[in-house]
Length: 213
Ligand SMILES: C[S@@+](CC[C@H](N)C(=O)[O-])C[C@H]1O[C@@H](n2cnc3c(N)ncnc32)[C@H](O)[C@@H]1O
Image (cartoon, rainbow, N blue to C red; front, side):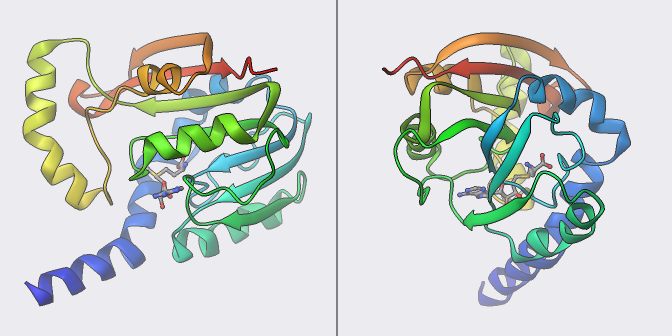
């Protein structure tokens, strides 16, 4: 048991960020990512910055990126991309989306691509998103999650325990749009689509607004 936990630590710390880059990053995924980034501007928080796969894709109106990412290796590996794209400046501000070291109403937008599936306290993270967004600010997201088809959901529930082990806590059956609305944000744009096997690749992409005054 002890040995397998050690192996999992090594896997999650040294291997998983590279697997995420291979499966979620690169040119192939840019067209999937880009719609979620449309309309981002000003100071943004990126939850689960990973190895910086969105660097180079931010609209020119983005002035500053405050990045939240717990993986040391992912943060290190983002260096090449941030060096190649010095604008906008990127600052690492924390390790956990559920604890944002930011003042209330202090950012224009939050970006999450394939991260709400993984954050352990996702309800806490979405409460933090709402707290730090300025009135009228927006959460831009691209997430995978629960399928609308019961047959697929049965498979998602079967596979989820394995996925969580090999995917660093990644859930297959979270419903990102529903969680975002439950956190009190208003859905303004939402597209649902699949890009591969529906168990893993049932996607939602959109923008939700903070209507707090
Ligand atoms: C599937 S990866 C996606 C990475 C990146 N957003 C992308 O689009 O390629 C999920 C990311 O969430 C990060 N993560 C895990 N727990 C987190 C937390 N509590 N707060 C913020 N990010 C977290 C992981 O380290 C990982 O980089």
